[in-house]
Length: 455
Image (cartoon, rainbow, N blue to C red):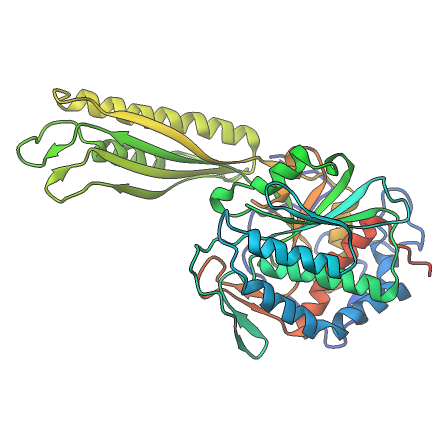
């Protein structure tokens, strides 16, 4: 994928990075230096010129400072809501209970037209002064990766909260609620409507189904001027402005099966599957744009002394380039079919031959957001908290919008976290780091929505 020349080079990485903590937050981080590691920051006017960002003027405005103070004053409530939502299970394809709870929270926050659509997405509108025109959407996904029955009780040690799903992505949901309270507390108005979207099916085999459904069916879809996804644990310095595309397959090799000794010499689906894994592992793939092929799950067989009748394989194909992903997909299919043919040609098919079935179980589109108001606002807001903006690529709900040409980024929900998708998942809610980093998403949302900073 080509990178727009106006943007810092994306490194394709979402590795955790060290951030600088400002002891005198919240005001010191909002003074902008002239240059940070290749990203030139200009002195902005109170009324930005076309193409500039509102961020610097916004950050020093009295309304925004008051909103940030409100975040600090209600931080305990943010933590309480994070715990409450985390302890409502939201397994893949079973997000309904959490979705209903979040709907109730949005209604309590005063949003208009709060609703749950036919697939389970929750939406609500904070109306702007030009209500009915363009919208800025802020989104977090409702689902987690953990199966039904997982213990999601939150354990707290100081500022560290631990529980499956506490960071990815329950914290994004709680951050949006905190934003809404802060804006209402200071009476902040925006030019554009703000749409809150809590999506289902972002994880795994959910395959972005909630966001796909929204952009295919929602009455709001044609009004979305920009989408800001809060997901994590995305590092606070990172702007995910490119969506890594992926195709995920279940490949099943089937044969006659038989006795390991008496039928030795007949075709064996295990060998065909193993050959496919080895050949896929030998593929030469580009580093730029980053492109990968991973054989991830293999199942089959019934006994140590039986030639299996069926063996299945899962494969994950990814690329930051749509064209590279198409090319990889073609080569993947060729290797799978060739492995089947080689096994049939190499052993007896007297009892039957090997057949193969290739089933697509995941298809996430690639895309990217070009340099513009959204990316510049995000870069300026990150620089303002003392960090160097890093543009990166990952697979999130933003992929769908990007693939349709809608400007979209994924940003941190603010704060530290780790061990996502494990039972030991954790997030840190220390206000010293959490509040400055939470201010980034809030600032970007307000800049894009045309916040009224002249009160």
